[in-house]
Length: 382
Image 1 (cartoon, rainbow, N blue to C red):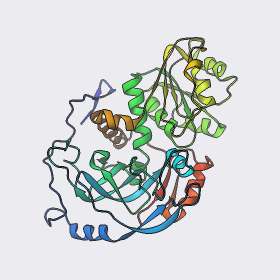
Image 2: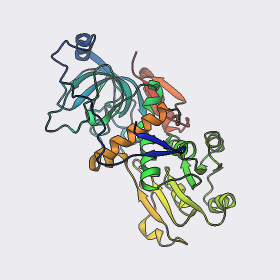
Image 3: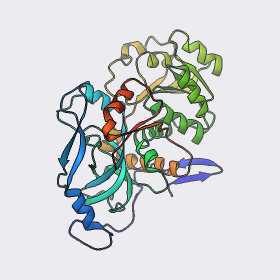
Image 4: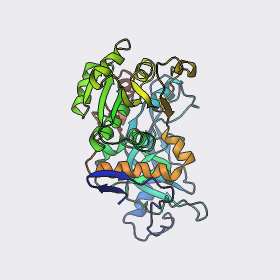
């Protein structure tokens, strides 16, 4: 158990020396009939034609087409997708804000069942594949490859985690928002009980995930800031100490009426634009502003503007994907701990609406129109 309680306080071990998986390595399962029931039927299923939502032209509706599964390379896992989350980055890809070569299959955060594995060579393995087996329920990211909106997606073994006591629907909306929030608040902000935070939130669930971790795990005091009274009410229901509707001109005064003239210890900013400008005014002297990974955003505060602020504070930007590339043990540990927190019912992602694959364009439009407060999921499995 990596999550440790000491005197009712929750601690996490992010040591780079942690060895996450210790079970004996499983060999490649493609050419064996042993130990996994119905293995051959799973492999036959993987070779058949499948359905996927393709983007053939930017800023046009997705089209459901047949495709055939590609062969796996070493260190890859094929997953029968149950649910695929739609994230703001998917929208930016479809709109062309983030460059992508068409045709492509969007979606990169999924839950499902492992149906095929091609294990890494011993010399290349980082112990990521030692506990993953055919038949496991897993969550996975395929941010570089995309392809989540299809019957079977492929992901690197190092981007796959298994789970047991979570519904597949909740699991699909867990990794990105909660992994980012945990790394930001625990590792970078050193959050503690009774610390005071401003967390900004809009649709997509990133701010809500940070609120869930800050208020319900660490018992910090959170002032939620959103662009609607509906979201503000929802943030109070989810554990915010207070929540207000965004008003750039009066935000600083409104927050200080709640927390006092000193300001807040931490700002966790997930929206960009005026939200970032306003939230920076609320942090205390030598406080910390954390900028979430806002996809395709080009309206952040320019460095010269920092020096026009009336006080000194720290600012940091964090991307979960950067940890994957530069500190893999921390990346894997963070997601493992998020899964464990969810299995202990300490956190719970908001998944208010699910669409079938045939209705994927309605799901995209809902995300575009900011109609849903939490994650939007597409149910891929029959």
